[in-house]
Image 1: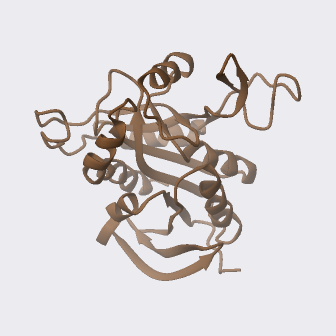
Image 2: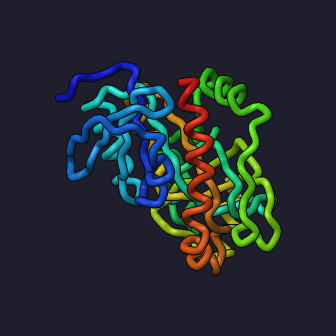
Image 3: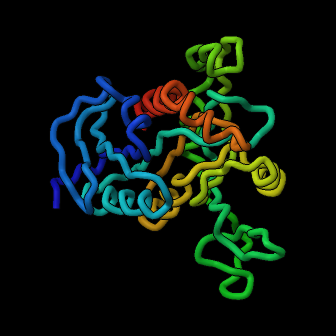
Length: 257
């Protein structure tokens, strides 16, 4: 067991390109290894943070979130990374702060389509009217105030479709599932049925763990692709530049936690 700091903040990323965005802003003091993951302790924006690369998927995210809660005593869990865009009003590079997170791949399959349901419940057993996880009202108010009037750095013409532009910053619904969405039909269905602005593979699992431990959570995602047939190409092409947007927003928000 480490010496726990009740003010410590857990910062999770899935892949190297996401965690690299914190760069010299993170002043590392020591590293510990648990469950095959390296947990770097140090200072980020003047706060004691534990930074960890979880790998992709809900199970990896849940494992590191649990370790951050139990081993390090973190009271807030943050996730910074990229996602696929679902909302047709958004483009590559835009950033979503998740007020509502849904595990879109948990539920019942009817007519070859998954009807999403709240984890741990099913209509035929332990039914619930609830769907997903909501950021706490108190944290939401602080985050909204901290980001009021905030503008992201311009996105290059290469990443934004030929004309450099300032990325949009939105609050909304982020969907989580253990698939990389490379399908326009699925993208449209997820947007129309669940109202998600973005889809990724870890966030709602972190929220589920945080709720179990009574912790605050915050998920910030920048769009690396638009979850259609070209998403795999766009993801690789724009990953480094787009991942920066989520980290920039998260660094600003860490200051008010």
